[in-house]
Image: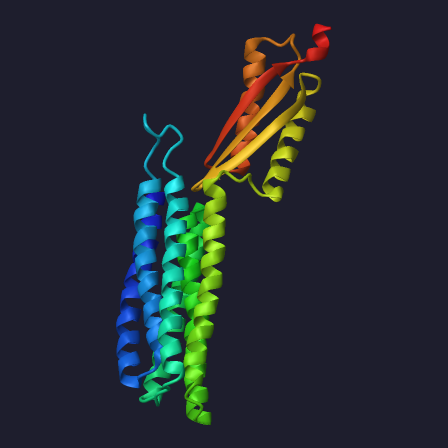
Length: 296
C-alpha cells in the first residue's frame, strides 16, 4: 500500500467515525435536552468537516511537482490546517451562544444515563481513532492528519467532561452546570484552534525548522567535513523551511579550489545523501563557493 493510500485510508476512518458520533450525540442531546451534549454534536460536526478537508488535502498535497508548482503541492496541508482552525473557532462560538441562552433558562436533564453512556462511548471511539491518526501522522509527517488527530483528542476530553458534568447534575441537582460545562468545552476548543492556526501559519510563511532539526543538520555537515579533511573547509548561510511534509534545506559550502568538478560533485552528493538519510522526503540544495583565502 502506498503512502497516499495509507494516509487517505485513515483520513476516511476519521470521516466515518465522526459521522456516527454526530448521529449518536444529536439523538442523545434531543432525548436529554442537554445543551452540553448538543455542543458536543456541533463540535463533532465541525470535526467531520475538518476530516473531509484533511482527506482532500492529503490527496492534493501528494501530487508530484509540475511545471506550475516546481516545489510540489505540500503547502496544501498547511492551508488545510488554517481552514480547520477557523472551523473550530466557528464551532466554539456557536457553542458559547447556545450555552449562554440556556445559562439563564436552565432545563432539567432527561435520560441522563443514556447521555452519559453516549459520551463515554464517544470518548472511547475518539481515543482509538485519534491514537491511530496521530501515529500515522508522525510516521508520514502529515500536518493535515496531525491536525485531525488533535481535533479528536480534544473531543475525548470534552466528551468525558460533558459526561462527568451530567453525572454531577443528577447528583447535585445544579442544572446550570450543563451550560457551564458547555462553555468550558468551547474555551478548550478555542485554545486548540489557536494552536492549530499558529502552527499552520508559521509553515505558510516559511518559518525555519526547529532548533533540534537544525542542530542535527549541523552535526551531519560537520561529520562530512571531518571525513573530507581539507577538501570541505566550512559551510554557511543555512536556510530551512517546510512545506507539508517536505523539508527544504539550503546552504553554502566552501571547497578547496584545487578540487576537480567531479570531486566537488562527489562531496555535494555525500552531503545530500547523509542529510536525506536522516530527514526523508527532503530537498537539499548545496551551493559551492571557492576558498577565498586561496585567491589572495
